[in-house]
Amino acid sequence: MTETDIKKGLAGVVVDYTAVSKVNPDTNSLLYRGYPVQDLAASKSFEEVALLLWNGELPSAGELADFVALERAGRALVPNVKAAIDLLPTTCHPMDVGRTAVSVMGANHPLAEDSSPEAELAKAKDLLAAFPAIVAYDQRRRRGLGVIEPRADLDYSQNFLWMTFGEEAAPEVVDAFRISMVLYAEHSFNASTFTARVITSTLSDLHSAVTGAIGALKGPLHGGANEAVMHTFEEIGIDKAESREDAAARAKTWMEAALAAKKKVMGFGHRVYKNGDSRVPTMKAALDKMIEHYDRAEMLGLYDGLEAAMNEAKAIKPNLDYPAGPTYHLMGFDTQMFTPLFIASRITGWTAHIMEQRAANALIRPLSAYNGPEQRAL
Ligand SMILES: CC(=O)SCCNC(=O)CCNC(=O)[C@H](O)C(C)(C)COP(=O)(O)OP(=O)(O)OC[C@H]1O[C@@H](n2cnc3c(N)ncnc32)[C@H](O)[C@@H]1OP(=O)(O)O
Ligand SMILES: O=C([O-])CC(=O)C(=O)O
Image 1 (cartoon, protein in one colour):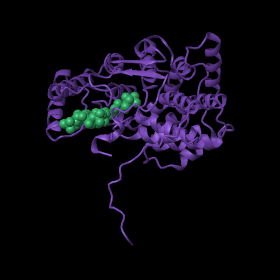
Image 2 (cartoon, helix red, strand yellow; image 1 turned 120 degrees about the horizontal axis):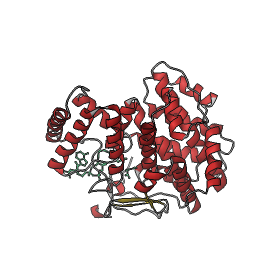
Image 3 (cartoon, protein in one colour; image 1 turned 90 degrees about the vertical axis):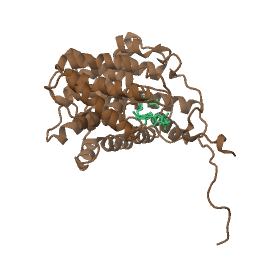
Image 4 (cartoon, rainbow, N blue to C red; image 1 turned 135 degrees about the horizontal axis):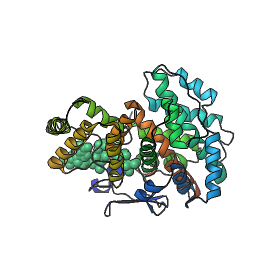
């Protein structure tokens, strides 16, 4: 094996087929089961998109109503999941809480070891319904607050915000949140989805695969970047009273210094897209609405200043995490909760891939080129 046979990071390697989504960097497009993601974000609920990803088709009115009823009935925080969360220190990362909670949910599930397509779909739906209460409660307990019970008269996004903040969110905020959930739902063989597929390929169970995927998502080169974007904003300094222009100038100076120090700036760049992330224009439009809603022009200054300076210096474009981070910040989520929000959405994509992997399985086990010492005597 030669140096050129090694595909470090599997860059450019096509590992398998998928019918779940198509990422096309040439046309800068993303299709979920054939539908452009920006069209889905414009008009479909997260619940409809979840069914599309799992079933391959958008739901009929009856199918949607059945799922909505199931989702609303499955939202409450389960006692032993809450007990497990309460045992974890509030100093741990919320991704650790999400990972632990999914593991407990796997241990609880009566169909845990049943990998029939029906059981897998049932478990995916249960996870989608139950996860928001985990994120909401974790943010609240870190602020010394208690659980807020879910409300069955609210849709997924409305209820998520209700359980977190204890008040009904404005329609614009609910819509921006829904859009983020639709955009984060699926992205082919990204690192966390691939992790889920590797675990599934051993014929392990769905909750184990999702738990492993959460571990892969946590890192700042992947989902952790939405949190890291906010740390950048915080490091530059957020001053609500500052003008958009002044904030942009400070952000530009910060970026120039970061790049001169050869830093990787989170929220920029992508393994597949080299001319911009297909989802950014839709998420940026949602961020713009939040900036207007909360009257926070200085945030736009920080956003524009960093983007312009990165573009000028390296022509590297923002990825989805870049507009999503400040959007969640404006909504009132604590910075460390941003990547758990990504989990809540990506549960759909992960589980669609778990089902696809299981339906046409081959153990994922690549080769390595040995470069340690040659055989030697003891
Ligand atoms: C939802 C998501 O998961 S999207 C991804 C979220 N992750 C991030 O935002 C983390 C920041 N970005 C990165 O680290 C990278 O762009 C990745 C990991 C996402 C993709 O990386 P790769 O395809 O492996 O590209 P790679 O890291 O080799 O970068 C290529 C070149 O661009 C530079 N580059 C890429 N991204 C960045 C960045 N964010 N900041 C500064 N330079 C960057 C690299 O330093 C490298 O430069 P060099 O050739 O001079 O060494
Ligand atoms: O595709 C990737 O490598 C990362 C990404 O954007 C995602 O998972 O949404």
